[in-house]
Image (cartoon, rainbow, N blue to C red; front, top):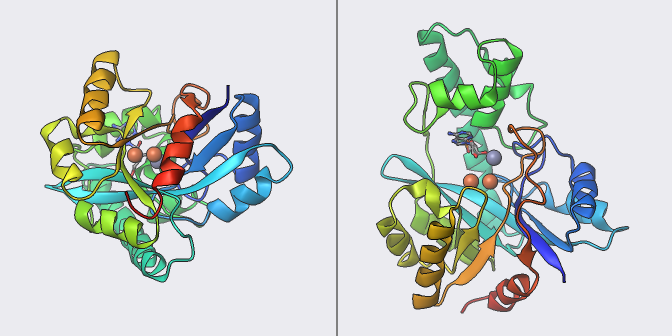
Length: 273
Ligand code: AMP
Ligand code: ZN
Ligand code: FE
Ligand code: FE
């Protein structure tokens, strides 16, 4: 049997794993195919493909776009996007700048709460790709403001937290169009984080082609419900561990092993269904 993990991050967004470390961990986990889906960037794809050259691992190019719907984040995965697509790269450059501006807003909010953190403390955590809340959380741990990244999200940075700032994001419709125009397959990431199953139907009407059903936080009940929806709406079934290396409390790679046939179905759906 061949297995895949289609939701992995690198240092080009907010994982601690370099492409080389990610490939080494993938080999150890017994994976035959992986997808790098960094937040709002495709910079990690080429280095990961290069790192996989000597190993028998297929790297599916991907992205995890952050969209905004009614003041909340909605993550949309794009598999097999063309990493050289001009429209996509132009949009990503703007989003990258928005993410930098957002860090200033978040640190201002933290300051108002009495927590001294400079934007540079946060930028130091990154390696030049996109910056986000996990970098803020790590900087807070380093400064001794919280004892764990978990605590940082629980107390301050979570979606309803006092230091949360959404910033400008694309709409789900726009995210789907960007991915489709770049030849990719749009998939709704971790539907559990929506906390509202009706929204799944809403995003299907935006042109989503698949659901990320196998995910560490999904209970068997959720999986069964999402499988029913996928069947009824003729959607692709995907999954992955959302491993951030050592950036989160546990290293998750290997916790989700997707049958490789599902990768072939996504591949076959490229360019429209
Ligand atoms: P951003 O794109 O900057 O909004 O940050 C997204 C990152 O924050 C992703 O890695 C999420 O998994 C992580 N994240 C969001 N909410 C939480 C939470 N409550 N606890 C831990 N990580 C979270
Ligand atoms: Zn992340
Ligand atoms: Fe996500
Ligand atoms: Fe993710």
